[in-house]
Length: 74
Figure 1 (tube, rainbow, N blue to C red):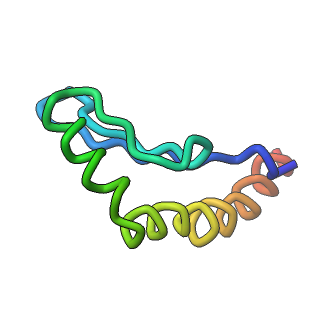
Figure 2: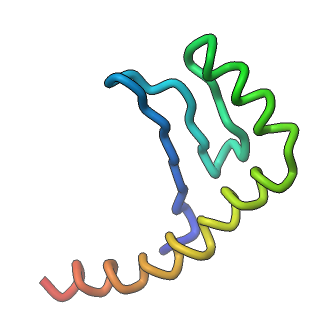
């Protein structure tokens, strides 16, 4: 069942995660001062949000079928 699949796109600098996009939440979440500022700006830009949300369909769901069948074959 691939309905519960989610995309998590993390941005890390100097071994510290400062911003994350989670497709279940549908928004960017900042974890540092810089990340909070970027999250606010990126969440207000429909183009950036749409691009991230499209990645779930374009990359995850497309490739998951291939990986899922390979795992089941083992």
